[in-house]
Image (cartoon, rainbow, N blue to C red; front, side, top):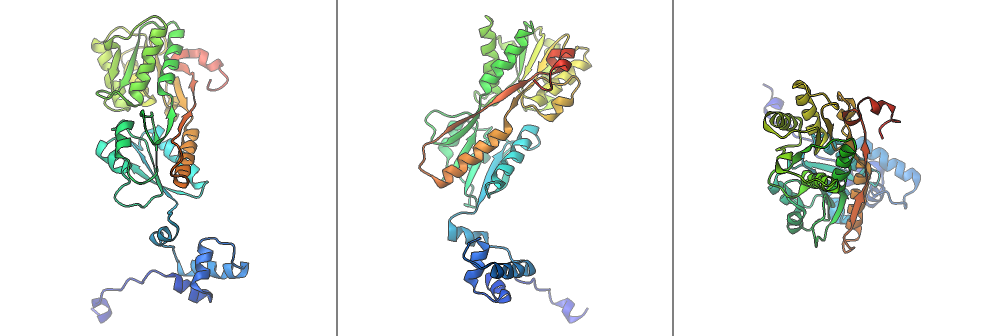
Amino acid sequence: MSQSEDVPRRRSRRPSVKDVAERAGVSWKTVSNVVNNRSNVRPETRARVEEAIAALGYRTSLAGRQLRQGRTHLLAVALPDLTMPYFAALAHNIIAAAESRGYTVLINETNGNPATERYVAGGFDAQFADGIILRPEGLDSAHVTSSHGPLPLVLLGERADGSHLDHVIIDNQRSGREITAHVLGLGRTSPVFVGAEEGRRFGPGWLRMLGFRDALEDAGGSVERSRVLPARRFDRESGVRAAEALLADGPDFDAVVCANDLIAVGVMYALRRHGVRIPDDAVVTGWDDAPEGAYSNPTLTTVAPDITASAERAVEALIRRIEEPDAPAEELRVGHRLVLRESTLGADAAHLPGDA
């Protein structure tokens, strides 16, 4: 083994502002002006500095920039489960909205763990971001509010009374009422709800169930406990289990209103396996407008939230909070629409002009 092989190879050091300045033949202040895109640099000088930056592979120091500017232009976004189509689409749209405003997004997956959500709401252990967007699942808004740390924080979800935080809200209860009213309007008289979050009197599943109850009461009925089935998770397997339990010892039913599309897909799969015809014997609805629902068999009637608007409002609210820390808290409501497909309308859905 040669002497050079005996000695560990030294890692070359990271290029500095002074290295760039020396290569470009300018002062380090000029390099700083170019890096920070200030206008007081002649075009030919800027080009020379940019060539030196590219040649050396120079990268700005995030910590140094934060110390100088008080900003990182990073936003932290914490969502429960990125395997779910709704949260994946939400993350995609938040990233796009942030990038268009000059911010970079870092994504954290909480898995709905209350301790993780408290950690996020508290601002993590280090102030690496300018602000946080959090969609809580394990904590209600009141507990998130009480855990709030020094960083600007915007919540995606229902607002807690007395909250000092900005909230972006989709009206889950109203949408649950509307989709159930659609089912009842088809002449269905024995609906069940799948997806009330067991042990949680908050969150989207609970609120959509309240909308289900409201619609039945509007029609002169009431909700028996046996007609509300919990779901441990908002996934296909939970839908299968709920449908099989319903068929085994549940009440008679002619409609299944599901808290989200993945549950609904699981419900339809189980019902078809047991010979239940959809929508002839029972209609099924979801919530989210996941792409899967447009290609399921039958295609799935659902609630389509305006995910793009949710992302835009959340990013706008967070940047406003970063720039105006003492501004009053806002509640920003985002719209939704019903998408009517074969799982409730059958062949009639083919006559609609696209998704209604």
